[in-house]
Each structure stands twice: as C-alpha cells, then as structure tokens.
Image (cartoon, rainbow, N blue to C red):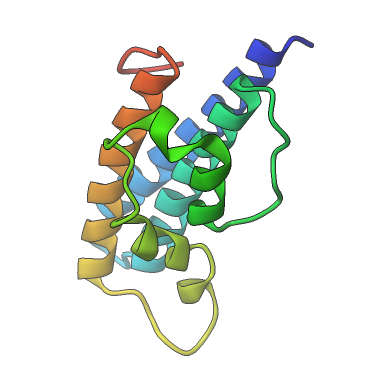
Length: 133
C-alpha cells in the first residue's frame, strides 16, 4: 500500500472521530461531554499522524499532541496549528475518561471549537478540501 493510501486511512479515522464528537455535542438527553472531548482530541491526533505519514516519518505511539506537532515540524504547519489549544486537547485524551474529574459542557464546547480549527488547518496542509477525504 502506498504512503498516500495510508495517509488517507489516518484521515478517514480522524473524520470518524470528528463525526462522533460533533454528533455527541448535539445530544441534549444524557449528553456525554467527556466523549466529545475524547473524540475531538483523537481527531487531531490522527490528523497529525496523517501529516507524519505523508512526510514518511515514523509515527509515535503517543496521545501527546505537542510531541506529534514537534515531530511534524511546527514551521512546516505554520501558525494555524499553534500550541495554545493543544494543552486542553492533549489533556482530553485521558483526563476525562476515568473517575475523578468529569468533563463539563464548557469543556466540550472548547474541544469542538479547537477540533474544528485544527482540523481545517491540517486538512488544508494535507491538500484536502472541506468535506470528506
């Protein structure tokens, strides 16, 4: 399988997470803000791994978006993918998945906002139009 096909597999997986996060963010009866946060983080993690795949670089088995951004090269991705929002998104990979601190409605709203921003920037970087891969 060529590198571009694997890149598109990463993109498809990222889009699945984006769809789950978006869909769950609209639920009014028994909402799950933790799931929104988790899937938003997973979307961006997989897009960063798609960028690494496209660059034919090793893909680290990490949920840390900082690490993945560094591996991609911040300069390469430009200012559209900055570190500011990655603090929250990285935390969402594990923080709300276990007992101790539940995610709030505000956490979920922030996760969706950040996911949309970074998703657009990473899709543009990969040469993908809005919509499906």
